Image 1 (cartoon, rainbow, N blue to C red):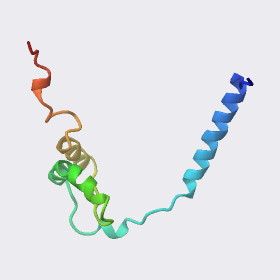
Image 2 (cartoon, one colour; image 1 turned 30 degrees about the vertical axis):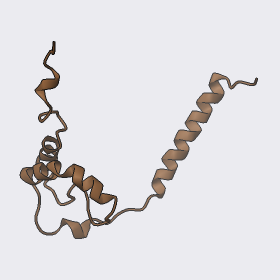
Image 3 (spheres, helix red, strand yellow; image 1 turned 180 degrees about the vertical axis):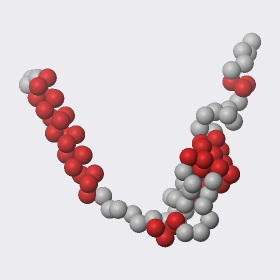
Image 4 (tube, rainbow, N blue to C red; image 1 turned 135 degrees about the horizontal axis):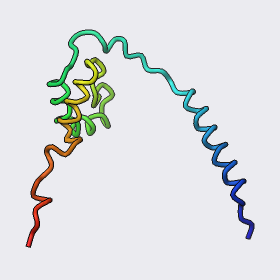
Length: 102
């Protein structure tokens, strides 16, 4: 049985990595300028969008006009609200799982 040595594996890995990196430049650029007009979402918008994110994720499978994350947001505060709303830090996790049962 012919096995590849370490140098050959490393070269193949590097070639694969470079090939994938080159293909990422072939993707289409999506224009979001029309989405950036109107209301800008802040912390409370991010919080609401975080709460409804699981439903939006399911709706995205069936509709093209639904997104999980608002493009027209104010940056850090929207992202923080989204993270808290989606339970990204475990704020909404149950304390019951840490209690000892017995």
